[in-house]
Length: 69
Image (cartoon, rainbow, N blue to C red; front, side, top):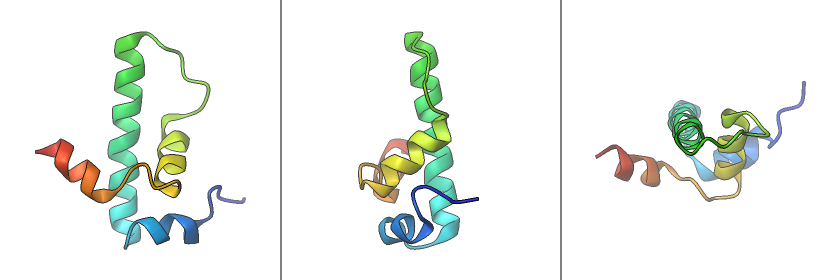
């Protein structure tokens, strides 16, 4: 099974695997909640979308900390 995006691209954006899991999980919950609130069906799974955002640098650990406060 190939992970897409590759783990090295993800870890280039987030310093540790533990933090990566937390950032992706939190963003995936946010994506799912926003889609549900707006009644928008998702083409991809929220976790896949969150992984792509992290790899692209659109979602960082700092962003998730700011929203949690």
